[in-house]
Amino acid sequence: MSAREIVAPAVAFVVLVAVIVGGAAAVPFVSGGQSDDVTNLADRQTDADAVTVPEAAAEGEITMDSDADSKTVLIDRAHANQISDEKLSMLVNTLVANGHEVDFVTQEQARGPAWNESLRSADALLVANPNQPYTPGQLAGVEAFADAGGRVVMLSDPASIQQFGIFGFGTQQQSNDDSALNADFGVSVQSGYLFNMHEYQQTFTSVYATPGDGPLAEGVDQVVVRDAAAVSTADGQTALTAGEQTRLSTTRRADTYGVAVQSGDVVMVGDTDFLTPESAYVADNDVFIGNLADFLVSGEKTADAPAPPSEGSDGPGGPSEPTRPTPEQVA
Image (spheres, rainbow, N blue to C red):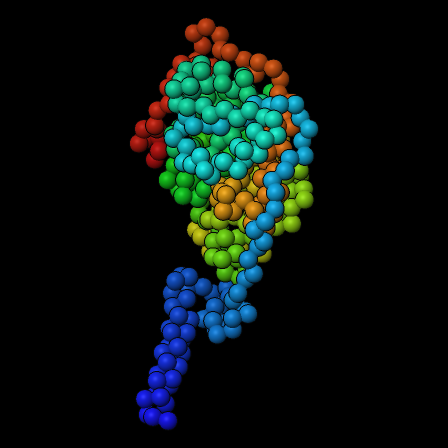
């Protein structure tokens, strides 16, 4: 055997060891220097079984259990909402396939009293990542809509909250902000994203969530959310809770964090990625999407609510137009 034949495998082995050790050493730096109670991934990199998390099964079917008559679901596009048609497609297709109507309200269709006119013809409202403020009249209209039995679903991503929270959804620290759509519904969202270094699906920001209480949790064993926000409710039900040892990026604190909550006719979910075609059939995401669709169409809204404002009134759906808060209001 030649010297080249002996040396080549040895060099390859040394390079392989260097890559493994170097990669392991880099992990604490990337993760921000975790404390001892966070998994020491550097020590576990050479143990493939210790760091490999089985992928959740990506198969299933989105079905609805509701036998409700045809309902109309209104999707807000009037507030520069940061969500794509593709991301909404699985939910929309499920609703339409089950005989329900889905309408999108644009900015033009939400000016002045037109916002309330759109709400009056709907049974449910879905709002995702709003990037513009709601006028007092619009907020009052949504509140009257929910009080009349209309279903309201709010979906919010951490990036949207961080950049636009004061305009659309208020964070827990902004719970008294009257411009926040969620302020009057007993639900709130925290700044930052959830991550779990112990158990995750593909990446540590793809967190497993387990069922809690209420109809949204029915039939669910495990849901995968990605880059999700922590949400909570003052007096409602927590439908999905992130797995043990999940932490919040802004505090690095491990806690029990809700990712989906319900308060009466209002639901808030701290994620939109679970809806994507790529994620819809992962774990029990399809079951949760079906439950969310059932929730949207299972309310009993009073007809002609919210009521039209009286002539000259600045009440719900009045003439005021969406405007951004002044710097003094934001401060």
